Amino acid sequence: MKKFLWIIIALLVVAMIAGCGQQGAKGKKLNIAFIYVGPIGDAGWTYAHNDGRLALEELDFVEKTVYVESVPEGAEAIRPITQLAEAGNDIIFTTSFGFMDPTLEVAEKYPNNVFMHCSGYKTSENMGAYFGRMYQAKYLAGIVAGSMSEAGKIGYVAPHPIPEVIRLISAFTLGAQSVNPDAVVHIVWTNSWFDPAKEMDAANSMIELGCDVITQGADSAGPQQAAEKHGVWSLGYDSDMTKFAPTVHLTAPVWHWSVFYNQIAEQVYKGTWKSSNDWWGIETGLIGLSPYNDAVPQDVRDLVETTKQAIIDKEFHCFQGPVYNQKGTLKVNEGEHLSDEQMLSMDWFVKGVIGSIPKSGK
Image (cartoon, rainbow, N blue to C red):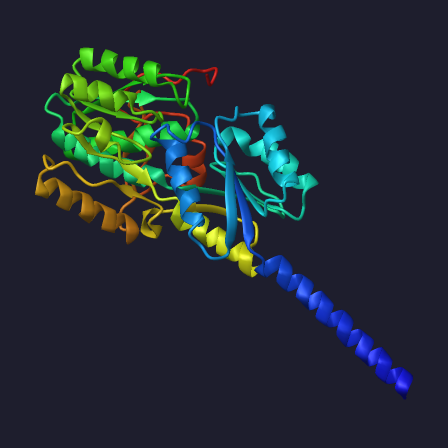
């Protein structure tokens, strides 16, 4: 009988230890790391992600956060991602498309860490993917740009010709044409995410062409500074760029990454996180527009809000037919809209975009 009791006690102790171990894995304070493609001072993409990182540090269950900035995309990213995993970070966020394969490679070697990759599509048991439907905010920004452009010529400083960028340019163009049917959007490729001088030069070249509104998909505030210098309207990207163009900056499609990062951290802390591929819309608060310039009329603001609500209520889709490509070929029939798969692989511009997509992808 005594032997039986000792066996029962031993089993209970083992169970308690196991339970404590699970709780420790779930309930311990988190160390969280980030891999950035640009510098945190870029005023754009990386700056916005870093704001999300800083918000994590305010959570009671986060021990600390760290980051590595200006990491080249591709194989060179494997080393810093590995170092962050070796350092014991519970979650590692890699924040650019070109980090996808390196993240997956490292994730396979460190199954006890959680890896999250931004803007990609590959996942594994301990690696998730995430992004936001920025095309929705870009469409709304297009409404503002089209309303404010007298010439009907808008300049767009574009980074790399990948589906994400093509999709955003096209959505912006459709938004502008919804209020200004003859509006065209000129693009200049910089082939870089962050090159202030090249981005400013691109903006200057389009202003010389007669564009009276400048916007961008690149990360620096160079285009905004060019617009301010020449006195033409501008719309930033990623974060509120008003301070770089205080008199001409109309608004900007922006990211609020803390909305997503806080949720993922809480899930990992509670032990409820599971790998998934998340593409959050404007209704989540992840994306939106920055405050308006006083020059933006109230009726334009009202139209933006009405359109935003229609998107949220699924009464309107930004790529709602009829939609034509640059050559005038019907791509989306009336009553239909592009699917997620079609948007994620988009390799064509809508009618009204002036500029080509390099075949090489560079």
